[in-house]
Amino acid sequence: MKSGSPSLRKIAERAGVSTMTVSRALRGLPKVSDEQRARILEIAEELGYRPDPRISQLMAHLRQGRAVAGTSTLAWLTPHDEERQGASRGYRMGLLEGARRRAEKLGYTLDVISFHKAGVSPERCRHILEARGIQGVIISPLGSRDRRLEVPLDNFSVASIGFALDEPRFHRVGENFFEDTQLALNRLAVRGCSRVGVVLGMDPKQHMVEHVLGAWAGWCVQERLTLPEPLVCTPLREVDVKDWFKSEKPDGIVSNVDLRDWIPKKVKGFRVGFFFEEDELPGVVPDLEAIGSAAVDMVVAQILRTETGVPRERKTMLLSGLLREEA
Image (cartoon, rainbow, N blue to C red; front, side):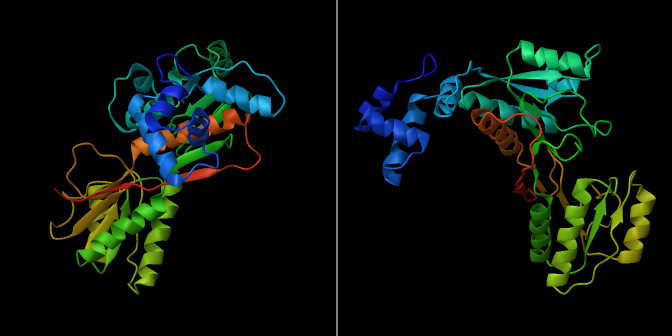
């Protein structure tokens, strides 16, 4: 147990059960009813119970016949200085805050380390991680120049966020663009749209494009609707959008950008794929806290299984976004 966290005995006394029953409930073991487990978890949460990751890790090693010197620190590895400095409150900081809250709930702290900081070579970055006793690394969404990560992470449990990282092929967590697009299309259908177009201001090779277009094409076929020609390019110019609109004549548009100044007001729009603060345009926005939290869970699970480096088979966890209607 962490210092200041209530003991199993205190939780047991409050719940009116044995400490063994509390232990089983907290670890998800059998021989505890769903009703009893729910009550114990509620009491533990109310009392501020926090597991010590070092004990969980030690028990995992002991069950495998090995001893271990544990640590309670994870790293958030990023090329962006604003995350290290805490200066931005946008997309990446939302992910970081979700990861930090989840890490703290599991008994870990989370250090932010920028690998593009002046004078920090990939090898130096690895030494920093080792010197801080870090075993788990979460790779923040990368920029366009970071398709490959050069920092050696063979001795760490790793999960990346997003789809920009091509190599190494670590486990990853990202947005479910396909399902989010389906939700957006269904909302446009409810609003009476029968000819929905797609406008994406991005590189056609990006991961999001194929998922949005795949969901849109499948939806149109299922609904027996015609498919307007999609517009996908960067930079996306006003003249391109207006020419496209004149040619395709959609009554609804799924897009990742704000087109309100470029198309008639009668055309209904729905955005997917990006986080927009203080924006009234309806859309499906990423659940940043859930994504950051899931990345922590993915790393901690690897730590407890003593799995490090690039996995033989990559796992990808996709999380659905949050529907935001017009105010």
